[in-house]
Amino acid sequence: MAVQQPPQVAERERQEVHSQPAHSQNASSYTGPHNVEPASPGVAKMLIGAILLVLITAGIITFLNRKSETDALAKETDAVAVPTVAVVQPQSEAGNDELVLPGNLQAFEESPIFARTNGYLLRWNKDIGSKVQKGELLAAIDTPEVDQELSQARAARDQVQSALGLAKISADRWTNLRKSDSVSQQEADQQASGYQQALANLEAADANVRRLEQLESFKNVYAPFSGVLTRRNVDPGALINAGAGVAGKELFDIARVDPLRVYVSVPQAYAPAMKVGTKAHVTLQELPGQKFTGTIVRTADAIDQTTRTLNTEVDVPNKDGKLLPGSFGQVHFATGTTVPRITIPVNAMLFRAEGPQVAVVDKDSKVQLRPIAIGRDFGATLEILGGLEPSDNIIINPSDSLENGQKVNVAKPSQGDGRS
Image (cartoon, rainbow, N blue to C red):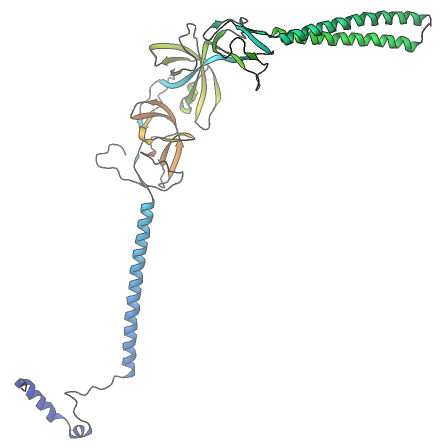
């Protein structure tokens, strides 16, 4: 079945057929409504260039998109690698005219006592806790070997002394014979020399006897100063070796407990107030309500570069013996200064082998580990005596892996956070 064309299309085709020249209809057969002429070489080149330009542009756009994605991924990776930390600033409080610092109570004098002779412990006269006076007998040592050596040395000295008498008689006799030319001068000189040698032998024998007498005197152990015995390490019958070497054994420990020394590390800011003769009070937790008055007797006169503190000694009288050496107490100084106090949260502390530290973030967002001196512990906060400034930004809950110079991101404070 033939498809009937619309009237408008059929009329248009008839007009186009009648309008064609005769030579055209004879030259070629009819191939359609139009004859397409081939494009010129310039147009072809322009088309190829346009296509290449489009391809190059698409490649550049693709490369730039990929580079942008790679840079964004690298930036995101670097951002994730840098830890984010929260910081706070130390709280500054108004100071007062009293400085309270921890201190260690130590005996004014303390000494281990060793034996100076060999033997066996015969008995001890004082036990731990005994108060002794200087020169009081502490123990007795049985020294049979030294006793026998002393007896032998005394007998040898008596022999030398007898020989000395004979040498003196011979020397005097040969001297008189020489006056009458009965003997030669050489023989007289030999007898005189023998007498001098006998004198020297007697002096050596006397020195040996004195040495052994000194060793025997060490069989009695006496207190070198007045104090209290804090340790006894021997019992009767124990073998005693002289000296404090590998073989030597410590017999007693004696300590002078009146007065006591209290050593305190004073922060650098308070160092000018530590004057010799200044009064101080010592308190102990186990003795509430009691204060023991002491005096600053000396300071190190130099600031410790590690802790930035001044080592200060306070002597405290202890006639009644209430204070025990080795105790931990609080020392109160009336400084007369109003140096502000700084406190930080407990969770800002770092405990390293170098001592307590805090991590501070500087203006370049890098970590600085600073050693600090701790004062009083208020539970949730700590008093810092040195190492920080009120304007420092310290990291709370710091990681143990933080290092000096490490880059960090500082988290923005949350709403309602009263600390910056």
